[in-house]
Length: 415
Image (cartoon, rainbow, N blue to C red):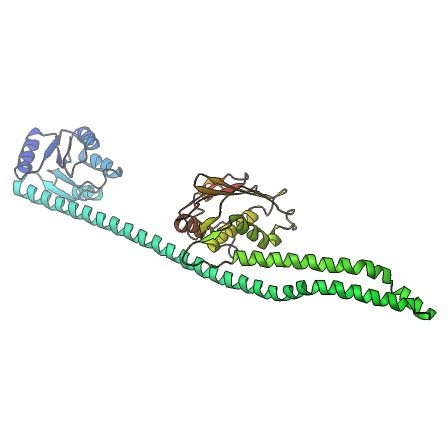
């Protein structure tokens, strides 16, 4: 059975006939029920547009039928007009308080019945139209909100990376000058020290003053001759280390143009690890975090390097946070080529996540960190970078107290 119809409920066959004929005379489809149970069954089979319901019936009376219909979310909005011979105000108040929209008093006036039914059908149609408009408007507002949030994330991401990139690039530049001076003069220091020791040896050959000889022996020139080259080599090794750090800072802060660039993913990950090295060291709550890398043979990636470095930074920083109370903290990073994709996994053996948290981690402004320690934007931005900017995927696998694995898949061309 299908189509819109009006359900008439009355235990009196004559009343059913009179009402049905009146409604059909103006083109409405009508179905009938002979008691309360029959009415509930017919409504369950197919919902009517409106119900004309007799109050006084054997078994379930009209009030109880109305009450049951209004208690069911699927039928609560169907307009109910009571038909009754009862004219006392208390009965009408009771019916209206149960959710009925109107009363028709027996004996019926055909024109009145048609007029009242027509009004309430029009009201129902208007209500449904309004509800649909509200639903459409709500959807539009939700879409506008999501678009605004995405725009905010893009702006935050752009400004954050610009500020961080300028800061890091500036630091790297400032480091380069003194480091360049040190590196450039180490060889000269070695030559100068050799020359000084040769001069000292020549002087010692002609020294005969016992007091001067004793003073030179107290200076322990043999130790200086042996140790000074070691000191110079240590300075050289440290300057090489600073040079590597500076290179990593420049790699991490690579500014993105409007076009994608060729990028060594391993270089980006390594530079991020180096920048976060101070956070990997042991503290009062845990031992040093062990970082294990298993790099596969992957091609250069055409992408926005600065954005991907930000993703690596967010994921690794979150992994470190998750390991703050671990007895044997570890982070494992793996890469491999998979068909036309590059697959990157970052796994930790930290506290993991509940299903509720896992379901929301990519939401805008969602965070489980204490006030002041997290904005809830990191993973939302990471998802936007991977999915929208690079047309890849980012997935998480995690269980409470069982660690977390983030998996990134990026098309090699990132078109």
